[in-house]
Image 1: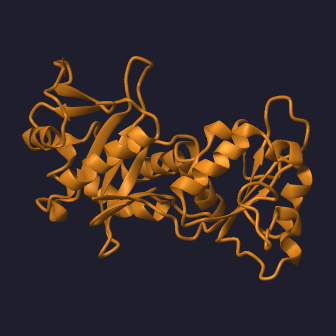
Image 2: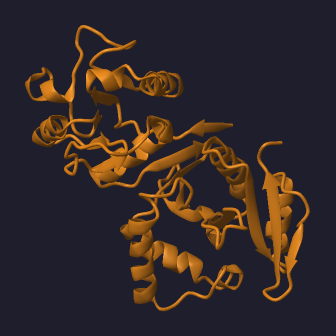
Image 3: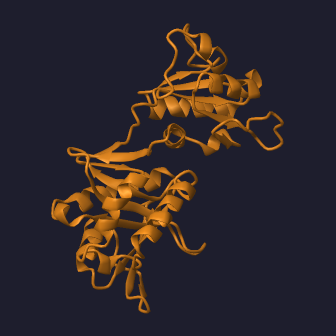
Length: 301
């Protein structure tokens, strides 16, 4: 069973939009979509289908009672006054700035151009980043997948350089300090901008980092995002990989991806069997130069 990850701290979406913007069909569709996929969240638009007597907008948040906690809320605004109100209330804020828009929204944490380009997953990730903590991606019965942090690196480095693991890594790791800088650059340059990435795998019962999994960026336009996973040696043979991989594929499909590849070294028989057990067809391509089998799965089937 897979359960979508929920950042429980994001409980309120505060909308502070101009009347003309609120009435746009794309905005109403956006609101309806949020209400459908995230019923656990409370939405406070200034007008529209979810209005209530206790509406809280960014412009009134400083005088509202009780005041929303920053860890609970994310403001969406299209006005400079809305950004300023969010800043005064110390609430994370993102700005709607379609092409040609003239309002100064530079104080918002992030900007977007089209309501059809954002969803609840984006809002949760952006809220987490604005608050300075890793975003949760998904959960399964026993595992939590979320973004890695800088403090995860020492454990991750030991995990990836273990004798049982290092031969099957995509590339040989450099020294600790070099890899740490690469890790920090990845956190800065990938998580805020891509909906698929490599994340940490945590055992939910213990909270321990037990692996890394997710998707590597395509090397060129002819390739797909590539699935990768690593379970630390002490946690293997518990069925974690077979629990994790289907959840990751479902997540990729929900983000709109139709095909995912996986690159496995020819001598990594265990991973080949795991992929087969998770629905990947027999390798359709062989890279004899690097000794790699390349699998591709169609997520639309």
